Image (tube, rainbow, N blue to C red):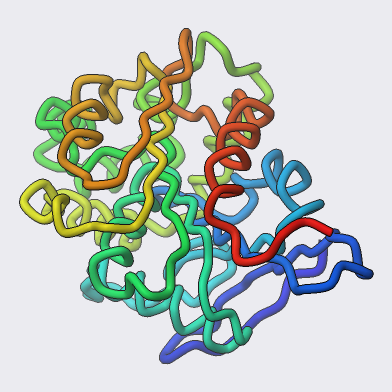
Length: 281
């Protein structure tokens, strides 16, 4: 792994561009961009990268405020459009014209926004455990008895809050204890003010009215038991999007990119292979 830090606008973004494609091929490979979910970081894509990097360049990075990327000060306001601008700015810095966008959970909402505002920069869009808006019951569940999620962060810390709500973001019936503890420890690295600001952004997002405007070919990939990307919502999204395919991973809840990376990679590869700029050589 060779991480780089690249200046994009007002932040320094930690990223990795992995390329294990055959160097003698006739044309450069397409690029898959991986955008992680809420208060997470690029390490959450670790199992998936080697499964894709033999045939594609794979770009992953820490989003604004997460991982080792610049953490804006308290009081900063976030928007999905801002996250799209960060990603597109990183693409520009790396001279990448178009990508196959793969977003996990809220990273998929950023991808939907990118498909609306920068459609020409996307070959395809894969939504991994992604709702088009946060389910209403999650808002109350995530406060864990406090007035709001920010108060919960103050009381328990981001890691403590994550532990209390982990089964919503990760199917703990499938995950090992080691994975659960790692997941909590990684989220605990996100400062409380960042987690609270991201939560406010996600709570205000509802792309339902604009889904018919998205012409980008889209793969909806979700665990059938996900409490966030609920199966009924996934079916509604498939019907609303003009060019969408739905694949439900039977028996899984949320966190399929960590729990079933081989299955996810297989579905992603099968889908995006139909929209590649370059043929395998």
